[in-house]
Length: 369
Image 1: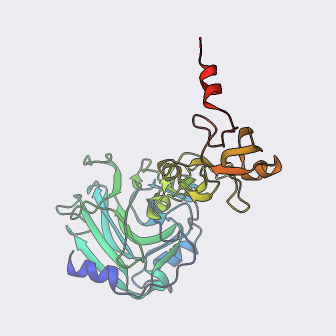
Image 2: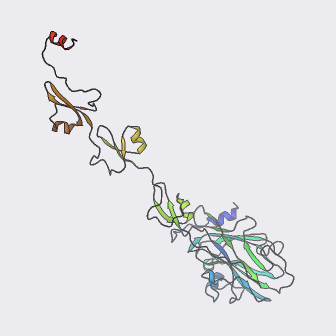
Image 3: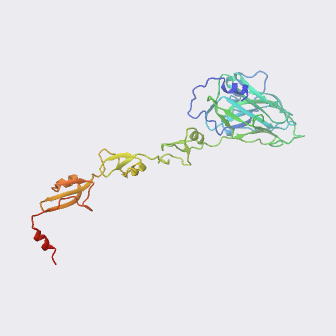
């Protein structure tokens, strides 16, 4: 970075900004605005030329107010570069250029910055700005207030005074035979603004206007604000501009509302039930890995929503024993004599087998043909 440019960007202490997005300078435009009611004087008016414009009959407070042409030739005329957005902004440094103009139709007599309150600042001129080198060629300027910042909307930042000649001998330019075209600074190939952050953020202009000499100039107007749902990793949603969404780490979605929430929700810990009836809050994958059953429909583990464990219940006495697969509580309600958690009646019945006294002869008789 050039030393003087670094000084322009960093020489003032950042002040508290009035709005949450006042430093977001996206979608800004440069407007070329002619002020026929103003007459140039060697001594700037109190408050500077920018304040003089906004107090005149040619004040610009909206796109509909811009006057981007000079229809009367053979006169001295004043016109301004105006910075505009869709809402009030705050910034420290401005950079733009003149990409070309018909030197046979227009001669620059004087020009300068419109610093807030008419207080001075610092400028870097490139390629003999604004005259161009040769006259009519591209040139540029980088500039900023020394002890304050610009704030507001439709703010004049530079004034020009010059003489408009007749229409003969027109030299074609990049933008048209009779236009003074705004654009990027040819030394940096950039036109736009640096905000009040430290270090400052760079914002390129979305449109450059032009002043027409006996023809329409180039019209510029800030585009409508586009605000859509911004989704974050935690599933939260906020309606923001694309830049603010990216700046805060979100992902922009073309949905205009957060109600209902259109953002993907992250995995959450839910109820996981185990065969022994215990309950834990786990992610689904962890639950399955540990052999549990996931129940996201349950609100939590208190009270425990998991079914109690089941086991073999032995009911009977002496020679008569029955086996039932039940919970421990059900087993005792059935009058069970023993309950075996996690052991079932099939395939291996754990209940006692009834016995009775007999003789060897009786046993052999059971197996005779």
